[in-house]
Length: 309
Image (tube, rainbow, N blue to C red; front, side):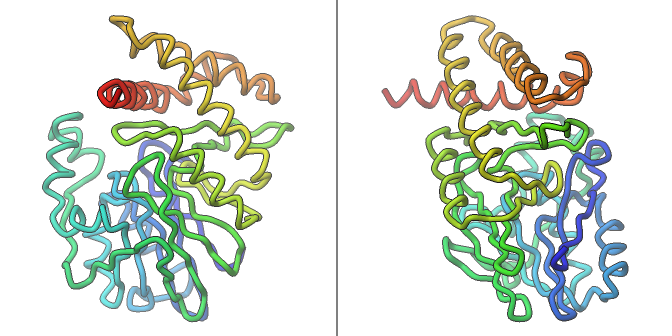
């Protein structure tokens, strides 16, 4: 629709991680880059859209978490005319990804990072554009408006596509896996993964996007969703519930595990009330990575909040 092509980047599992190719009058822009392992899929998407690599003018990153941006350097090597647009806080990490790599190695280990993300290479600084709040990417006359949307990360932008009246939301509009679709519609949960989750900012970013009255949201995890107002309300309710759970267990020695258990209960209960028929174990298995990351991220937020009191 509207020249928007969904690319399954292959990260994690099928239908887990998406990037997008936007095509306008023979020119193209990628939204997010997947991992270095994703490169063949991006080149295939270019060919499927009857384009050549030289026809791609932009790579726009919603933020620099490695499932969204780890492949940017390698992808840019294959796009001779493209510029890379990224939040000002993230630009330096694309030019010199050593801090990103070190952080990922510390959490996952070097072997796992190499296996999951491939070699992370820098982007030439002369090809990097800092997309400040309100920056407009001009794709052959098609306006792609970049909005500063913190809450998931402080280096996060959402991109409003004027032609489609839709947002490419990265992670600020949550996660919605197609396996959890039901007669009640798409099911969605917030993402509070480490280390910059801020609930008040997340609420504000969601409301800011709603003011554009978008017809659809294109999520990284995963693909296009409609019923935007209903999904936004679901996110608001769950952010509040997650904060309440976190505060309830803030003093527990095993708080992260307790929070993760209650998050699982929260998501399963809401999914079943919406009409998802999968049993609890299947839902938890599908969301297990996100449950763990959400618990870790909200613990970081708890500690930060406590330190500022």
